[in-house]
Image (cartoon, rainbow, N blue to C red):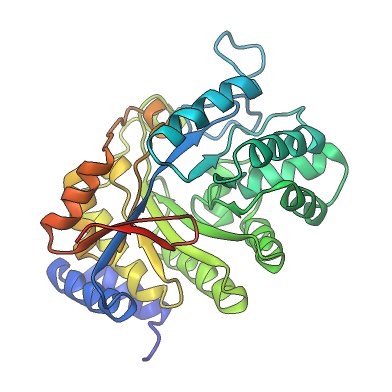
Length: 349
């Protein structure tokens, strides 16, 4: 198969017929997933703190240390959330927070070890590259050492959060304190080389161009060629309510559903070496989340038992396991529950 070039991908974004894009992405999806199985994971987002010094303009979740509603969860509070997850058959926690200015590596080691020891059946999919980078800085150690020490304690996988758009000219405006694109890539490279696999993400719909989006896809594809360490790609649109960026650019238009499906299909075609593409029903709603399965997605993400970051920006879609099964079955595909590594745990035929 000839690889899609950057110029060809750009042309598809700008000019392709949407229905034709859907057909092309579905054909590629069928090559990778010929059994017609669409998966999801039963998990919970646990945001261990909302205290963050990075002050991203697109984020409505973060607080500063002295804010009245700033928090750090206690281990008992985290345990209670995991207990609730186990009651519904969950297998994974997506564990991340704000970039706390004072928490050092020892705090994170104790936390990961506590969860891994008390809940050995739960996979810890945690800590964005931005958090890992700052843990290293505040602890006066290397990123490599952070990853090695957390892996020993039980960290199994890291999420792709913090990527937004891998274009420094965009990042310098929407998140000027955040790590540069090449640092984000290198932290995932280091994780992959330690056999800590990860996901890749993209948040679009702020000030980026189509060319920036293609460059983002290309950086993901290049690292995947090198390491093979991305399990999945997840893409969502900027949720603007309550954000500083919307206050600065009040006439900013929300990306359309058409735009989401178009970019998703091109992602499926361009990221030919990434096995799984997730649908973001959390930001797009159940109908477009389901439609994404016709534009290259083969995974509905998670049941999202708890979600705090996107909901802070005014979006609060929630779906139970039975609803996800129905959305998949309704399109004639086979629903299945998976684990973090995309192993099938249960099929519903």
